[in-house]
Image 1: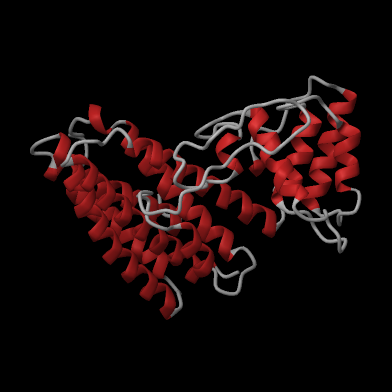
Image 2 (image 1 turned 30 degrees about the vertical axis):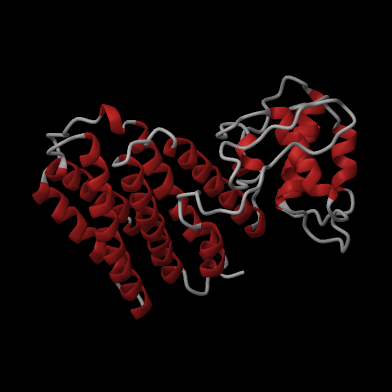
Amino acid sequence: MTFRSAALALLVCGCVQHATPKVTVAAALPRAQAPVAVPEPEEDFGCGVYAKGGASENPEAFRACVRRAVMEEPVCEDGGSPDLATLELAVVMIDGRGGPPDIAGARSLLAACFRDVAVEEVLAHADAKEKNPQAPPFETCDQFAQTTFASLACLTEHVQNEKAWLARQRRSFGSSLERPAFDAAARAADAWAMKLGEVDYARYAGGTMRNSAAEARIFEAMKARRERLDRIRAWSPNTSTDEATTREQLGRAKRAILEDAEPEVKKALDAEEAAWLAYRDAEVALYETLHAGARTSVTNELAAARAEMLCEMGGEP
């Protein structure tokens, strides 16, 4: 799957009111356990919402959910690399998270799989836990999803979890002015995040990690925005943001990104800027529903955040 098709599948409108009704529940297991729904029953955000740090963190539900996903088809039937759900199930079995430890069962689960770097990492973790049950557990899929395929799936899981957080935050914007502004800003933010990812996708043309690099950029943008939204009601102007400094920083970042770049990179950067302007205006409008007169300060803060992100992309300080 190309980055564009993967991103289109992931970055649907952040507003979930039009999604097909669906509830993600824990898999049927021998032990009695009530199903647990994801934050918004209108959309399936995947098992990652139950993982450590997820929007609905629940070890039992996560273990049941990934077990259900693994049971849908034979594990590594062709002797290939395991998918992320298989790796995650093996890890929670090793760590005894959401159920009793079962290191032997985890090894058996991976027995038919190609021993790629991700499998080796999980099996090494099994050895460590067997020798010392107090050895630290794996907290996130980033610690073991080290193949290109698994790392992209791990990033996808993070993106879906950000969408779950966004759905939860949406509930707090309930007035006739706030909710439409929130939805418009969410749509614009999704569109900008995709275009930002496409800049990295163009920059890494021909590379095996271009999809992962692009998806990581999308996740970074979504996470940063979620952190800003967490503080939006307590927002106050940041007087340290200097417009001239931001413009200079942005110029340096663009020059660094475009240095020796292919024409596709410039096209992607131009598209990113257009999408960002639309997002900026929508986000400012959202802030103004809560803070009258916020336009100038919020505009400067968003510009500074974008400049910093582009500087990271271009390797500029």
